[in-house]
Length: 501
Image 1 (tube, rainbow, N blue to C red):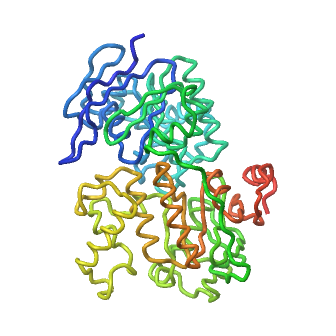
Image 2 (image 1 turned 120 degrees about the vertical axis):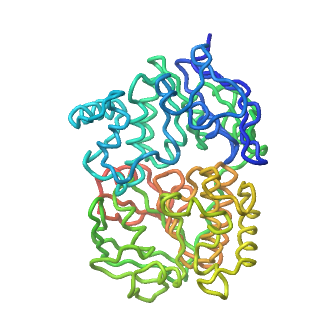
Image 3 (image 1 turned 135 degrees about the vertical axis):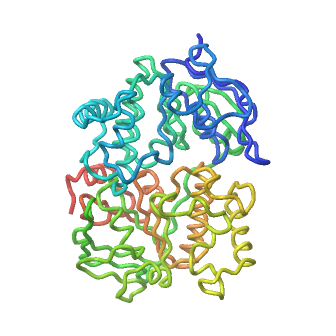
């Protein structure tokens, strides 16, 4: 059978780093093909070549057996290839409808017609089972999960025969992921090909027909769903068998409160705020905040990082009420954060790894806001070594790193401050198994030092595996916390708003 998409001998170098080294990949019509590998293995780069965003230094591309050269993504789309990127390709200043018009309007049409775009968006959204919300809302103010849904709808526009998904479920709830899998099943049944990049091995064993594993820019294994279980896939990815999450040590019975919220209300103009939220987080404890993205998570993050003061209610840190809400005050009080959107909120892409590693006033040394170069370089090297961040030197711009390595840098910087409170939003998004375990090992050390961790995640599996207690956000209201062992049925009901407090 002639593959619908064939990549042969694809090679790409960035300076002295070989991102891709002679990679071959066949994708067949009517299959879901999983692409696995550690962060920086070359998966996204390979798919960017297939989508016309990266020009290979060597190699060839064929569609239905015919050689093709893609000068840009438009060429790839005309060949029937669509892609949902790990980092969103949306224009924040434009509305949902205007962003969709970029993909849904007929080629060559110089004036977009909103009614036509809205109708096409509604059809594709219904096909995908994804809710898009207000089409007139500016994209820049929308939560991460909703922006992901918009990207999926864009990628399904036109006669898409090969759909490339780069970590598509990283910010989706289990219910939304299940809906997406149903869409992929229908696409597979209709004869389309799906390339699925993920670090969630359970998704591979549940969905993929064939699996290609990459490591350091090369293909190291090819297998099928029936030939390899999760343990074998993990071994192929990282070269060693990785066990599941370790038991979560309980905090000390007399542990003091690191964070307390009482009847806190926060309003946001373009998304859900907080409506009378109360919670208590003890030293050495992980409190999980679960919920479908867009139910107040952004407001909670902005409150606890000093970006948005409460209209009503009180916030205590370490037993003392917080009087001023600004980032500097929260940082000085010992709050560190892992933001929901790493590129928009976590780094300055044009700055180097070294400079980004120092973007916290508690890491700048005795000079305060005056940067001390020697200390900055030493701190950055420590982070790179401790978290195995793959970069072509400390002076490499962060925009040259893979998404997973950017995430590792943000996590390393947050934990390097020895925080008393860590606000972690989807902390292992885009990380491979080994990197995620390294992050949780570092979090464990912070807990031993007495830190409290507020884990805000749309990955219910991660919350259930890591948290001591779990509460659910629904439309800005927080449920009473649940203790281990977590009742799955009750959690599911709370996520759907059927038992929200």
